[in-house]
Length: 373
Image (cartoon, rainbow, N blue to C red; front, side, top):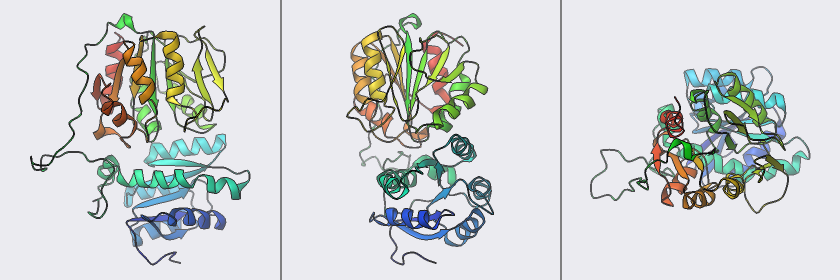
């Protein structure tokens, strides 16, 4: 059954075995004037058929479904009819594992479904869902990945300049501070701030880090509970460095990569120990790059290597500005390799990016800054 006949810019197919969830997600998305849910499907098999016949711009798909799961369907979709897919996953350890599998297979992003107080919790994700649909749809990287042509009626959030742009059109050229890299001995801590597109991007970075990493590295990846532990375990298996989910009270150790716990804030105290906090800070994200980095700046001053990677919003910009003013060094992922060029863009536009590098070069740049190979 076609949900709406009036076509808007972004066409979405909603896939979920729950009638309630199909209706709820459709209502949430249709509330935005730029989005139309063109149809729904109740399992992966039906989703594949409708993707081929309707050619949606975006698919939202439950991970666990009867007849054909979201994971099984995703494999076929990415092979036969590539389209950006946002997975919806239960907030459980098993759901986290399956979601990370989906991201590895090419899913663009995910949203965690809260099972408690479903009618209330479901609607609390409306803005997150709408934002992710729009950012995924507008991502130049995902457009290239799926070889899809952006219709002229809606412009992407960020445009990648190409040689075909006339010289009369003003474009923003990314620039760096021009500062010289500090000596490797300068650094005592490294931080990575990352969000949308992060789990897959980190798989291109962390396994390439030197096993001789001379400082602790803390990663703030915007994620809910359960997901960060699964992410840490996966990265640990494929990396020379030790990767773990951060724990309250543990002393920071060189050569260890700490993933901030999902759904909680992470800070560093004066004893150089990790603090995991449920305190309510006036910020959008939990964990939050700014909360961690500002606390780290109080302890390490400017002896921090700060890396900002793909993600929505501006988290990290204010704290990296502080670290930069103290003598720290800031590396930003470039626009071309970002799923969402939000967080890196904010750092670059603030004029504090010392280097702008592609995803494939981030690990090498970190290793070089820290004097290891």
